[in-house]
Amino acid sequence: MGLRQFIERVEGESRTLTVVDRQASDIVQDMLDDLFEEQPVDVVEDGGPDAVPGDTVVVSRRDGSAFSSSLESLQNAILFVNSDTYISGARDLEAVDTPAAILGLADTVFTVEGYPDTRKQKFLLIELSRYIEARAWDHGVGELHSSFQYLSRLRDERGTHDVYRSLGETDVDVNIYGIEDTTVPSDIDANVYSDHDDEDLRRAWFVVYTHPSDQDESAALVCYRLPGEDGAVGPWKGFWTFDPDRIEDVRRYITTTFQ
Image 1 (cartoon, rainbow, N blue to C red):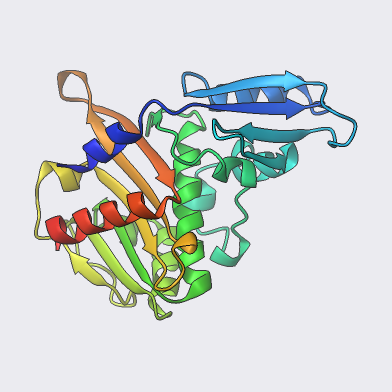
Image 2 (cartoon, rainbow, N blue to C red):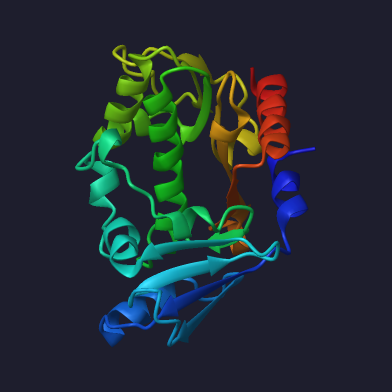
C-alpha cells in the first residue's frame, strides 16, 4: 500500500457549503465559487433563518453535523491571502485561526493544481498543513511527521523554516521526510529521514500530528502529487482528517516505510 491508497479509501465523500444571507460583494462569491470549482463541495446560497447572521458559511456533512463560520473569516484565511503569507512567515503559528467551516470539510478529497497555477484551491491544503503544525506547537507534546518532497524547502521558504524551528523548541517529537538535495538547517531540532529516494516519498505531502493522550487532538493532512501528461507534474490530490483510526493508519505507514 502507498499513500495514494489512503486517499482512494476516502474518495467519494461530498459536502454542501451554504452561504447564508450573503451581504458581501459578488466578487467575494465568485472567489468562493472558484475555490471549490470541480471539487466535491456544492456551494449554494440561501436566505437563511433569522437566527443566523448574514454572511455566514455553513458546511453540512452526511451525518447531519454542521460547521459554521463567518464569510469574513474565510476571506482572511483563504480568499484574500497570497502565497507570500506562508513562504515569508508573515503569520506566526499563534496567529493561525482556521475557520470551523474549513475544518468541517475534513475527509473530503480535493484535487488542486500547484505552481504555476494561480488559483486559490491549493491554499486549502496549505492552510490545513499550517493548522496542524499550529496544533502541535500549541500542545507542545506528541509526534509530528511532515514531508517536504525536497529538504531544500526548509531553507528556501523562510516561513516553513521558522515554523519548524519553533516546533523543535517544544517537546514535540518532530520528524521530517524528504529527498536530500540539501541539509536541514542546524537550528531545526528534528529527526530527518531522507534515505528513501523513491517515487512515493518524492510525490508525498503529509503533516501528521498525534497527541499522546487525547486522540481528539490528533490531525492529519495526506496528499499525493499525481503524474501529469508527457512527463509534466500533475495536480495534488489529498484530504485532511481528524479520524483517530485514519490518522494512526497513516502514521504507522509513514514510520514503517520511511524510517
